[in-house]
Image (cartoon, rainbow, N blue to C red; front, top):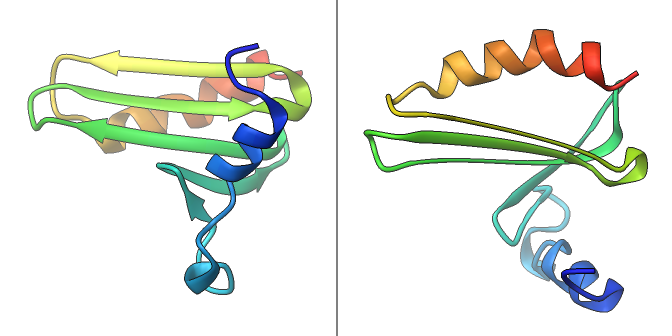
Length: 88
């Protein structure tokens, strides 16, 4: 285990001021997806490299893609077709 359950809960709980409006905490956007239930996603770029990660803790799944070009939309498009194939 990389982090204890209390630590993960603290990291993934949105700040009190934003809980009603956003599902973002600790750098992760929280949402539901048919293939993974409650999932977390994070994307980042330095304008030359792009990385996107999707985590599905309920299914014990994680997906990460990186590219050496600025390609946020392209990674999302690739994930939208490949994740459902592997998250059965």
